[in-house]
Image 1 (cartoon, helix red, strand yellow):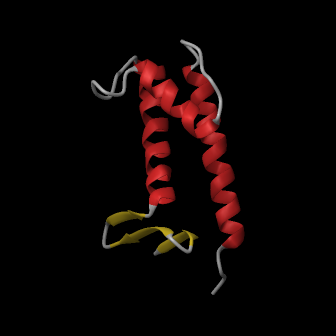
Image 2 (cartoon, rainbow, N blue to C red):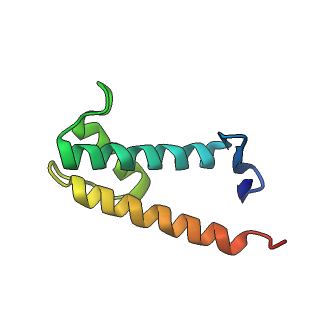
Amino acid sequence: MTHVIDDQNSITVKDGITSFDGPKAVDRYVMITLKSALKGYIRFKMVPNRSWTPKNMLLKAGEFTGKTYERGQYQQAFDDLTELLQQLKSAEDANQPTS
C-alpha cells in the first residue's frame, strides 16, 4: 500500500516494512515519533534519549506547529501535533485518487 503525499513524497507499506520517501514524508515520521515521545513524557516523565530533552521536544514541536511553547506546555504541544497530523491526513486523503 502506498500513501502518496504529493508527486515527490510518499509513505509505502509493503511486507511489514514502512518506507518514508521524500522530505515531507520524513517530516511526517518525525512528527509521529515526537508525538509518541511527548506522550511518554507526559504520562511517565520518560525522556526517550539524551537528544530529546523536554526542552528540545517543545522546540521541535514548535518548528512543525509554528508556535512557541513555554516550559511545561507538553500537553499543548502534543494536542497541536495531533491536530496538525489529522489536518495533513485529511488533506491528503481528499487528494488521493480513487480506484
